[in-house]
Image (cartoon, rainbow, N blue to C red; front, side, top):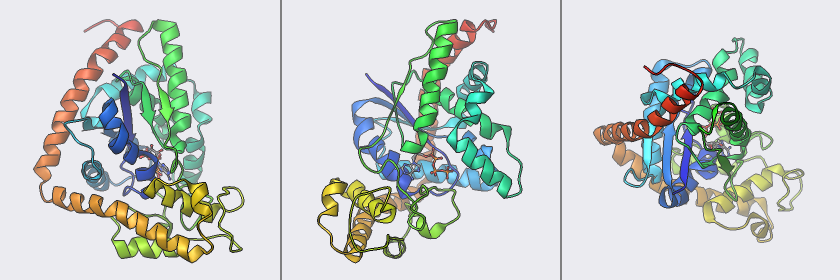
Length: 331
Ligand code: AQP
């Protein structure tokens, strides 16, 4: 059976971008057709300045939202990265096959390190090595497929390179995984800055739709979205990024084709109204299930405990074998 692994970082409240780019595929497709693991990758949240209590709160919220969005713990494994030591153990071995040059080429590192410096902070070493830990997350489970939004594709490519290099040097320890992206919604842009990705840790709250936003907040954000000059409704990322983003969001929420949708609108107002309604429709059940789960925190804890046990049992033999392969003396 195909093995699928993917994760979500508790660096902020989950966004519509996380949902359309990743979570929805996990819920609607991957958990039913594959042996799938979904992880709240909390160690990754420590790569930038963070408030410990907030990370803890966001980790729990992310896990609760994954269940609210429809991940079924009977169909897949849902767990928290730091509960399974094998991720950090394997990360060190992979640091010994990765080079600093390839780390510095990662786009997310370049962007985030600039931001950290602009904020007057220093850049943590873990921000540079974060893609190696992500490679460990994936390789520890002999993963075949990694369903992610476009921004993570480069990191999965690096994971492939590290797996191939390790296998060549030390024997076939790892499966070489591949990234899969959704047909639409792989890169949802900020509603106020359609040139930038809708990111959960960005400060411009007005351009970001959070999964737990109330309907009137969603409506206001979408109705105030920046559009392009002119009145034409065309799917053209380069020339009409604002309108194209709305078309992609509407298509992502309804399953329609964004190019075909473009032909159905003659005004931005109508497009925004339909997009706001479609987003509200998608988020309503998630919000409702989230409220029910929050009322029963013991259930989420139990799911995460069982998930970590299952994940550990899968990862341990793979990581133990990698330790032996590189020449470390078995304990
Ligand atoms: N805007 C987006 N459009 C489509 N997919 C997206 N993803 C993130 N933003 C978008 C996908 O969501 C999954 C989980 O993301 P992550 O938690 O690994 O964090 P990220 O990729 O670094 O994106 P964020 O949410 O913007 O976090 P910050 O602001 O902390 O960097 C991934 O599959 C991702 O591709």
